[in-house]
Image 1 (cartoon, rainbow, N blue to C red):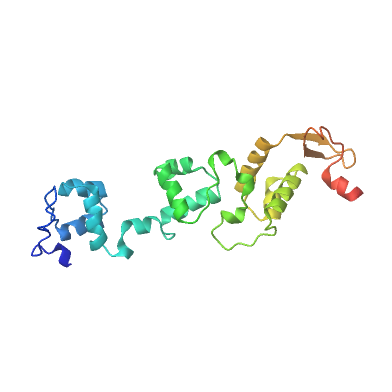
Image 2: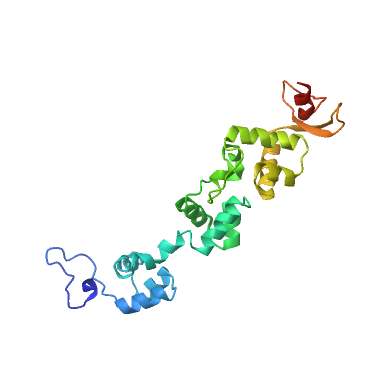
Length: 224
């Protein structure tokens, strides 16, 4: 490339600048970059700043071979694992950072670049997300409406269905069921009672308007 030919003078007589222009060995720079050396180490080798190395790499390395492009690509195995841990296992970004051995900021940045909407700290807004928003595959769900999905989830949980059955009915994995149960138990006050009609244990959400219940939701629907 002509920019890195030493026969070309970079100096501008009208703008001499405060610092002496650094001429880097392009072949050596590309060799270190393709070897997987960190930008900080390359800058230390050439005794220059990190910004100088990045500026030179921008013109030397093709876009399809630039390292940072691959860092935010869905074909990157690390990113595939991050998506799986975040969407399927519902780990926090800090927990994923410990597993992948990256910083939490890097994990959040990669998820944002990959189009994954963040849940928020401590699952504070988990109720406002449908599982399809976390799933990168074109998976079809029986219930697409978020309000109906949450209503059915709480209904199945109150009827005492096991996690496996709830996962089959809503077409989600058991890990998602466990996380949402923990979230709803933190948000609502569930109480357990014996149904007077079917004599099965059921749950209901205790509020200031309803402090007790005698029959389960299923028996109430059958009676109506």
